[in-house]
Length: 249
Image 1 (cartoon, one colour):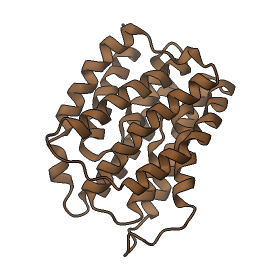
Image 2 (image 1 turned 30 degrees about the vertical axis):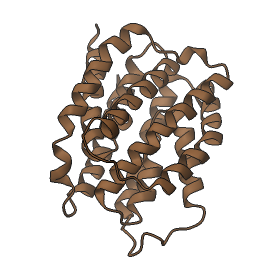
Image 3 (image 1 turned 90 degrees about the vertical axis):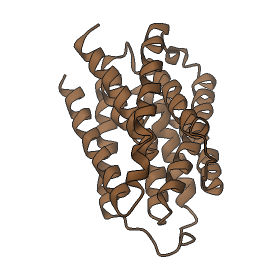
């Protein structure tokens, strides 16, 4: 196993821990190095879909609690993700691995810039009519092109001042919904190259589960005050560094 593959495996485990603790960050931490290490960009997308679904289902179903998502937000962004996912497949086929890695990094930088400016509204109902469709379409496109569809949904929810638990559960629910949308878009467009290899799955599925377990105790500590928002910003910064490193390699 190459050093890059080992680094990608570590990034997958770290990303699962981050996702478990805040509801966001798995793809942003894992995708840049996994794109660099996987045999092809299409396989990297397939791996991220399977592993992302794993960590999100574990968060929703294996924590012995009742999830508290905003169903209206989760349902809307998943519904709008389908047209975006089809567009994302076209981007995936048109760009080579290096260009996709640069696109991942550029997307994270853009999300970080917006996140640093975002402040919660006084009312959760203060939202533009186009906010959910835009978040869904953008997330769908990013899911099938770079596997990093989280930032638009994060910004949608953080800008409304929702409680951390609701943000975490809504993100996780939306990501579960994105998985079949992405698979459908890949199947409709005949992107069979996205089927992940058995060896990669055998190595990364246990690491993903371990990372999810490690991240669980952190959420309670982050849900008070501004700690939750600070960690989300830190996740984006770390991801930018990982993306630039993968491009350099």
